[in-house]
Length: 337
Image: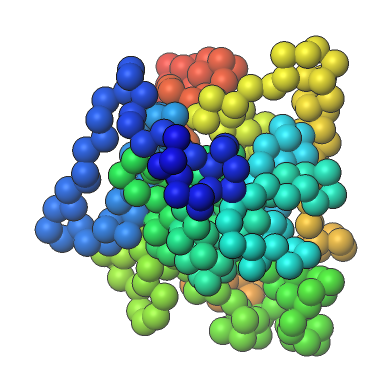
């Protein structure tokens, strides 16, 4: 088979372009007028559509929301190959073809999908088509859309954290963490005033409204992106979230009982302790304080989006939830909440 043209990283990188026999031909998505915000995301498959074998799992990483823990679970516990920022270490960022490299016993594709330049390089090397990555992760949703095409779509999930908690965590990370880039004397109140705090990060990144005032229209668009394109996950509901993610992507534990126990323990440990958590414990600002009011103001759209995502999480229980959660939800509904 000469069709590879020598560009793939070994035979695994040659993808089958025709859909599997039992899968319908993919149809080019039509973006209706007024929905232009969906254009860059058109090759992320609809979360309610039937998964295809040609889909690539994609994790939209919201900072300080348990993203590193998810990557560690998928890479360390489940032994999957990740496309993140790690694979370009040791000079692999200039490799002419795609390959899987092993770093600290984990497997990575030699790309950096966490930067805009890195995404462009990964796209030009045909990352999605190669099928080398079991999971692609990035905080750049719009740009990552360029990694996929009609026959090689992205299938996305995210992990959401309460926006006020996320902002406070970011404050401590940036003033006290190992990679602190703000002066440790900066108060939470000053941070929330606009000295470092991100204004409605989630809403802005979902609809690519990085500058200027946000409006209710942006919020409605962000809700639509969440509903159409994502499996919901929550930092404070980790076990249920990871069970859903595994089901969503058809991932299984090892068939070997001992290996399976190891994988489950590995996941339990990581979900319990988290990775990259702020080393020192800290208190949340109290309601009624200036800091709390400012953070609420800076995250007002994200807070509404967070509530909406909770509703979506419950709606998605029917398809992707665990048996236990389905039972709980039924009881809740019977009891009228």
